[in-house]
Image (cartoon, rainbow, N blue to C red; front, side):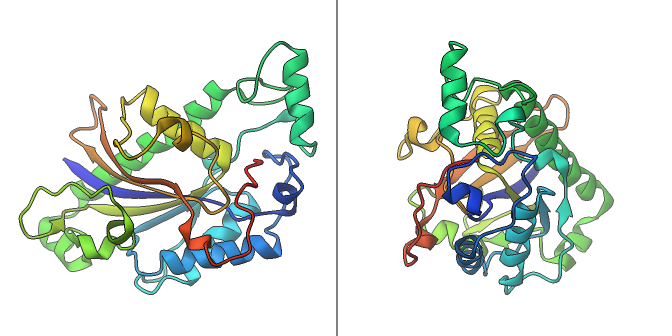
Length: 276
C-alpha cells in the first residue's frame, strides 16, 4: 500500500482576476502585487511542511506562486519544481480575455448555464476531468515506483518513510478534521508529501473527480455545495491518499481541508476574486 499527503494550492491573484476577466490558457498573465503578497502568505503558512515533490501548472501565474511558496519553506532541501501542462486551467476558447459576464451571457443564449457551458474553442468539463484523472493516476504510480526502488533503510535515511503528524502542521494544528492514524504513537506513515499548484476551475473539477468517480465523501463538518465552489486565490486544500494497489485503481481519500484561506486574514485582500 502507498500513502501520501497531497496539498493543492490555487495561484495568487492576477490583474485579470481582479477585473473579473477570463484567463484560461491563452492569457498568460503574471501575478499582481496582491497576488505576490497572497503567495507569500501561503508560503509562510506552509513554511514548516516538509514536501518531497512539487508540481505546478506551466502557466506563469502558477509558476510564480509555486516558486514563492518554496522560497518560504524552511524544511525542504532545494526541490526542482516540475511544470506540467496537465495542470493548466480550463481552456475557454473565444471567451478568454473577456469578462465573466460575457461567458454567462453566451451560456444563456445557448440555453445552458455556467460552468457546464463550453464556448467555441473551449475545453469541456469532461476533458478537464480527464486531465485531472490522468495526473492523479500519475502521482499514485510515481509513489508506487519510488517505493519499489527503495528498500526500507533507504526510506528511513531520507526521512520520508514516517512523517510525524506535527510535520504536517499547519493542517493538523488548525483542522477540526483529524488525520486518520493507524498507529498509537501519533505518527502518520507517509511515503511522499506532494505540493501541487494549479488553477481555480481545474481544482474544482479535480475535487469533483474525487467525489463523482472515486466516491470521495465530504466530512460532516464540510458542506459539499460550498466546497465545490471555485477556490479563492491561494486557497489551500489538503488530502491524505491511500492506494492499495495500482490495479484495480481504487484509492481512498481523506480530506483534511478544502479551499481554506485563513492565511489571508491579515491582508486587505478581496478573496471573492474567483474568476479563472
